Length: 248
Image (cartoon, rainbow, N blue to C red):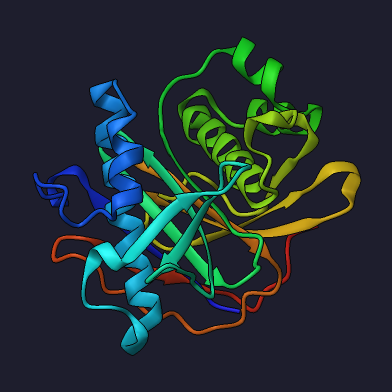
C-alpha cells in the first residue's frame, strides 16, 4: 500500500472561488467566520491537488470537477465529475499550512499537523493515557513540547482514521514511538497507534514540517517505494511508505 501526502500554504490559494464546485461554494457561503473560511479554502485547494496528482492521467483538467465533500461523520471524501473517486483521504491544517494524505480506496487513513508549542501538565493529564504521560515525562524539558505534539498529533491522525475525531475519548487510542523524537531532520520516523481495546493497530510516520509535527497513520504494512505527489507550484510534496510493521 502506498500513502501519499501533499502540503500547501495559504499563499498558494488564489483569491477567486471559480475552482470550487457549486456544492463547495454553497458550503463556503455558509461559513461566517473569516478564519474558518480561509482554513476551509486552503484545505480544499490542497486536497483537490492531491486527488488530481493521485489520479494521474485520469484526473480532470478542471479543478472544479474535483469535489471534496464532508461525509455525514465529517470525514472528507473526494468526487470527480460527480462520482466517488477511488481514493481515501484525510485533511489537516494549522497556522496557514494544510496537509492532505491520500491512500487507496477504503483505507483507514488519517493525518494531522500540530504546532510544537508548550502545553500544560493538565493538558497531558486530561488527554493522554498513563503510558503516554510516562513517555512525555521521561524526556527532558527541552524535548517535551515536541514529544507532546507528536503524541497529540498521532492521536488526532488515528481518530481521523477511525472516522471518529474527538467524539471518541482521546485515551481510547495510544501512541507508541520507538525512535528519538529529538531528531531535527526531515526524514520520516516510525510510531504506532493502538486502537480502542487493542483491537486495531495503525502504522504511523512522523516528521518535522515547517516548524510543526506532521503525522500520518494507516493500517500496516506500507510497502511502496517513495513517490512524489505533484501539486501546485509551491506545494510541499512527498510520499511516506514503509515495509516495517508497527512498533510493539
